[in-house]
Image 1 (tube, rainbow over the protein chains, first blue to last red):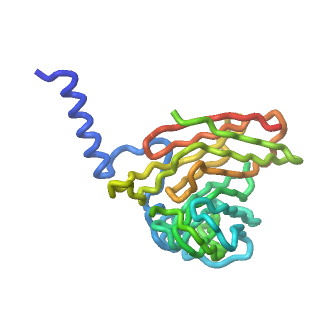
Image 2: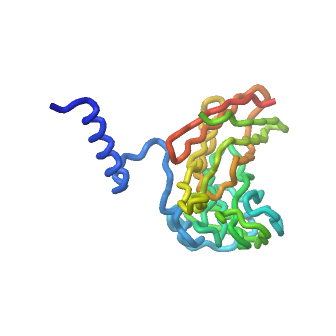
Image 3: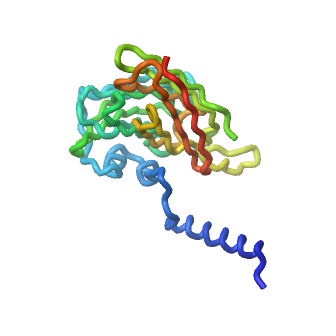
Length: 151
Length: 103
């Protein structure tokens, strides 16, 4: 006879198997794993269905020249262009480049600030993806004196 | 249960600047503990915000967002008295929603 405990154990096992194969049904919150595992800016843009990124003056990135503590680096991304779909912050030399992706709607300005971790001195990119699939970026080098990724 | 978020929303003209400070460990999955074992990743993956119950912004975050994340954004066409709610969800499935009134 199968007890309730056995049934629970088996369903747990099946669930973890499903999770391992990536077949587990996605919930309402989408999380683009490919994009967050990508290492280069072009790969991230591709993961969101955009073409090769080009540099643009209409995207702005605000970050310090020197970050004393890589664990907390304030960054702001903004764009003056209309029709922006996503705004992203990327740190090129982090283990995975993408830090954060913001979806822009009509109700918010394309201007976000947050704080990121940086493992080492690296170029930081602000990437804007427009509704017609173009990827525009601005970059800035941030020097890190104390890393924030592991130790 | 995670600690509440601190949300500050201030109207300026027809816009409102919202600043959110979340309380979360944001473990990267890169760090090792004293026994040399990798500390598993534990970070916020999704953030959504709503103005008066209607979703206005969503974001996906990786493990590289700093511990106790800070987020600032500007809402268009928001006025004092409107309600802003912020929800996050982490990779362990935990979520938290907090609400603030624009002042």
